[in-house]
Picture 1 (cartoon, rainbow, N blue to C red):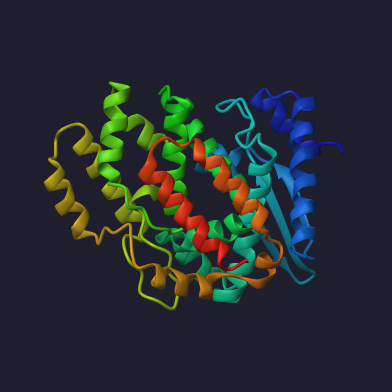
Picture 2 (picture 1 turned 180 degrees about the vertical axis):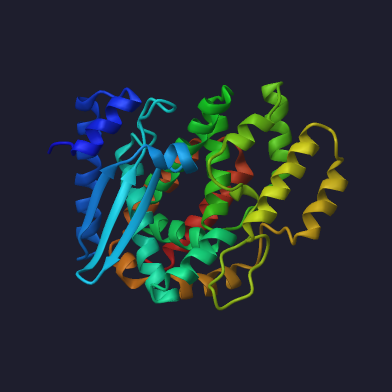
Length: 329
């Protein structure tokens, strides 16, 4: 496998060693082929290194679809390492598998709910986090431990960008909290108090870390819902950003916890709902092709991994989410 001329040029601009980049691309391509086989996904997909998607939009991975008379060309792009992030963000092999499953899940989900109408897809993606929640849940069914690792990777990147040193337990706890929001599952933990404790442990301005996180603040996100149903909690992307800023005000003692609660309530904040409602939403969202490629052993491996998490309530929330998923396998 060799790099294209454009990839070699990008590597030169970014100061990335071609040999290292070739190995990373090869790893991505091998993993992609495995995911495509597991999902019995016949569409041809190309893979390219494009650091511009990081510099323009802070995307570690992205997808481009070209339509022509001859047909559709799909390209998945990865953006690290580059001159700002000099390492492969998703260096763990399981995280690569999970990330690619997430991208394929988007395509299957878009076909199911939007019949590949790109205007509808773009509108939901731009304004709401619901499309992202569905894809992350589908990928979680297929590679749950990989999803945990990929969310840890995103926290590590935020830590690197903000120059905030985090302990392993803090990274794991923050990643699990984000993961639960990204798959739209229950969080019984008091989220503002979680960040307050984390901020106090750091002893410095925690806002840089929160704002350096390259995704929306899914810790504050609402619960999973199908496009047919009324969502519970915050699913509008702009509202999540506002709530993140209000949370930062609280961490800086510019708002009391009670005042923060009122601000959250204005935007419909909720992080837990009835399990029956979640189950019904999952029935509508899940895709048989992905369920067929999923295994209970992977769920057990993920459940075993999170036992190292010391924060009991958060650990229990994750275990309950896994148990809910296992009912479908």
